[in-house]
Length: 285
Image 1 (tube, rainbow, N blue to C red):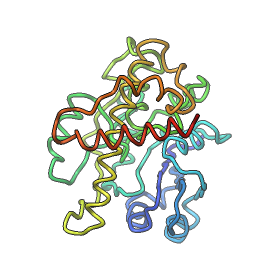
Image 2: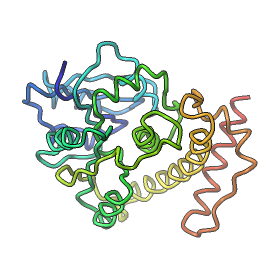
Image 3: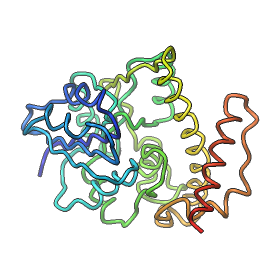
């Protein structure tokens, strides 16, 4: 069994993937690194191969969607086993020693299914670190799962909805409930690892591309907000085994109940998100 498997999930990250890989322990024989390129139209896969060489296995899949790719790699790849699985976003770079620190955090806490790396840069980094320590949350940029938890996940038949926006929220919830319904929730099943950290490229608000990317990101956050309400209801009733293959299957039932939040920060983005979800529901008919 491999000691550590690092999974880098990347979509159109040709600008950042080399820095991401350079921050990983490429020469460590105890660590296997897989770059999962999903639905990219740029040179992400080619740069990953050139940067990582023989130390990196690149999976270049034409289908987009982070959660779909998470399922395909973690749940559907045969023979995948490790003591620790570490997940990194392709636009993040991790601090030295983070991979080992996450593995050690799980070893030190036998009851934890996951360990979370903490943000190390950005205007709100300190606030996020405090919040994650208090709530035992995880960011998709850097987290680890215990290998035995992944094995049970694979055996359970539970899957992330392919169109879920963001894998980290549901993965974190499933770690806290030990793959059970929401009443089995225990925050302590995720360990905040202060010795593991990641840095992301600051948003370039002085450039048009920075504004455009942030605008799209905010709409995605709103879609995630509404999807999370659906997922919470499923977790509180039938449990994670009742997750649909795609959440769009439930949009027609749920959209009449949703309204844009009155908070000025979110009102416009919620409206755009609900319009996107409505269009997806109509397209499915």
